[in-house]
Image (cartoon, rainbow, N blue to C red; front, side, top):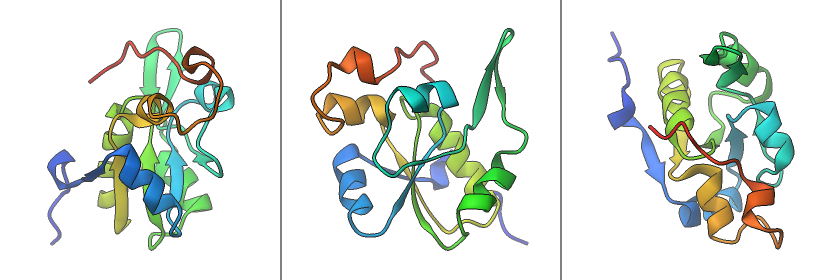
Length: 135
């Protein structure tokens, strides 16, 4: 019987490493909400929200793994990102436990991507969402 994966089992990469991986056939899975994704995102990213915003706060997307399976294979090399790294870490744990083999969590999330200047010339406040949900 396979052991259940936990956050310690997730491979974390910084934004520089993530940017490099994306140039060599890795896919970027953006697990932010659709609203966050529409504001700005990594080029060629696939968006499958890990959580939804509701009037009562954020709730986990019950169809997350099914929706990922519709756009990614378990053998795909994935870089998973959110806004600051919390949701993507939890998403990576779920993906590993579902049998995905090549999953990397982008530390710092899209906020770090923007802060390093990888998102273009617009001011950071136009590109990223202020995070009040830091883990």
